[in-house]
Length: 362
Image (cartoon, rainbow, N blue to C red; front, side, top):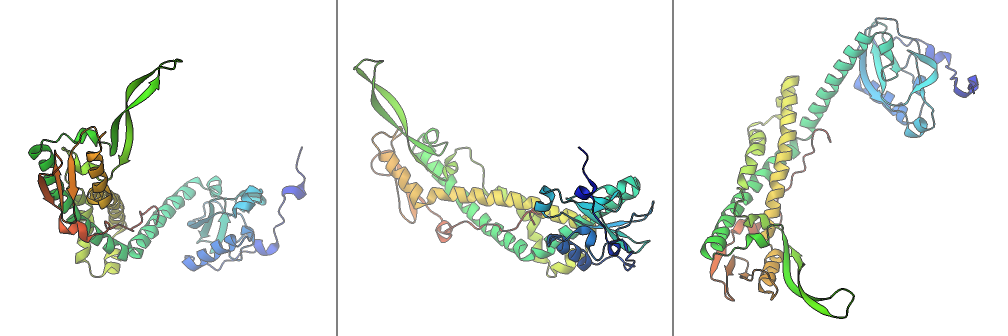
């Protein structure tokens, strides 16, 4: 059934059609912000005081200065904005509307996402390409300048994390040597997933009869953190910091960060922002690995291992004891060898963390 004119026709007032040829130069960021705020406040796009609701001439030069979405409630209700390019009196779009500046006419028009393409495909695509480049440039400058403090704190966190990693590497190497070589304890197969088990026996009924039989069962005992530090083939934690530190360490030599960033070309800034964003992922992984390894020397983990090793149902009985300064291990009731816990591991209650956002989240 056809819809009546009153259902979808939008009456455009003459003021909206009036040519507002006041933008002789590129509209400022404040102009763009004003337009976006107008839309966020729920006002109709075609009534914006900067907007000229007339069809652009063919082959007009244009510059896209921003994008906007109508309120979600309006989009869902079908209250869409008309586009002066192709649908001047009927709702056409609700998302990704374009704020377009037409320098030849000195006007701003609010258009549908790709509506100008029907008038000038090449002009639209060129304007989109330039707009995306400008978006990326502005985003990267904001990311780099707005996160200077977090960038420098990230460098400190990585340097502190590296010192902890070195201490854990040294401690782990000695501990593994004492356990696997000196004491000849084949402990790794029993802890290699971080889950400790007990071997127990249980009576089970045979079929539907009243008779029972004793069966061997494996039951979970406890989970432990930091168990990877006991892997005989574990790799050095300190090596995980090479790549992120290479990316961040030059910050120490940059006193005027603002001038450093703004003095770069667009491509250099892009490479720098990408470098930090990628190094952030590697740095986060390195610090997470250190935090996990450090759990091995926590009171909770060592106490759990001690109790498990002495449990009568432990699949591989051994003796472990510890205090604030050392860990001792052995085969019998009394530990035989001791390993000193590096002081730095006790000095840090927790491993430093990075609070630098990724460039996509910034």
